[in-house]
Amino acid sequence: MSEDVDDIDEAAARWHAMQYDDAMDWDGFTRWLEADPRHRPAYDAIALLDARIDAALPVLRHALGTEPPIRTLRPRRAIGWALAGTAAAAVAAIGIAFMPGNPIPAPTIYRTAQGQVRDVQLADGSSTTLSPGSMLKVSGASRDPLVLNGSARFDIRHDPARPIEIRVGDYSIRDVGTRFEVSASGGMLRVAVTEGRVAVRSLNAGGEVEVPAGQVLTATDSRSAPALTAIRRATPGGWRTGRLTYDDVPLGLIAADIARYSGKSIVVDPRIAKQRFSGILATGSADAMIDALCELANLRKRSEGDAIRLDGGAGR
Image 1: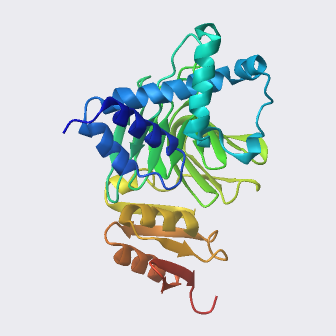
Image 2: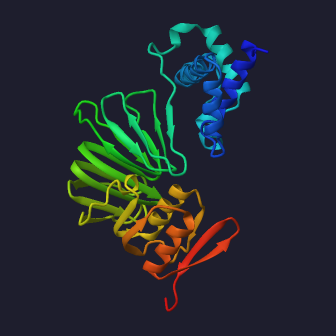
Image 3: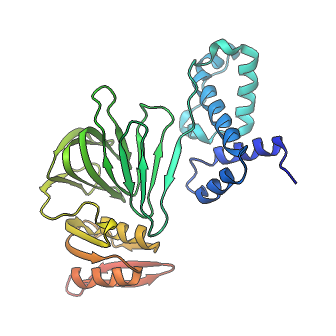
């Protein structure tokens, strides 16, 4: 039996409400979008309505005589759909004159599964390659930053009038015309620049560090000064060839790479997470990669529920 239009709209609203929830089922969302040609337009309409309501809130509050909500109580996108429905009714009552003139398309989410590598072409001609177990959100608004969770290689088509910004955890990376690779996990960041240069800043500490071609920026937390070193090995993009080459990389980032590639949850003892490692790991099963890292870096592994915990080896 064909879905009713109201049912489709209700499902689209539920999916949109879950977009910024850590428990969001992205695979389920993709299957839902592809299950019926009516699903994508319905979702886009919901996302556009939400964006318009949000942009019109100052006018709505003034017209309705209400005080703005306390923002810290709930994220912007997490407001219930009952409240969104009330605001939508108020928008209709006040009139379309208060609406922004240009519709904002819904963001596009790109994800890679365990062991999967994905090439993504951006609208401005730039491209990126996502490593396994990573996510990239491309906003519908052209000047909004890209949001990366995991690891990716970027080939940016530089436009001084419209620079690209990438948000990765507590960090912001601004294109200054470049080709580079980003890896982040647990407050750590590594940016390896092979062409051009980028500017990296911490969202917590402020300040900006420019990273030229041939240099690697490594930050072990967003409040401490990062380190700049030369690229001494062909490290960027190793996950595409089956060989992960590391040169003075924190163990926390290496464990995150293994976890994303293998799908295995890995916990690193905080006391050794910032410890640096240099060496080559062949991609494969989680056990094989972890065993190789433990042998090369003198670590111990033990089971911790469904996860593997890495601790310092004997004598540490």
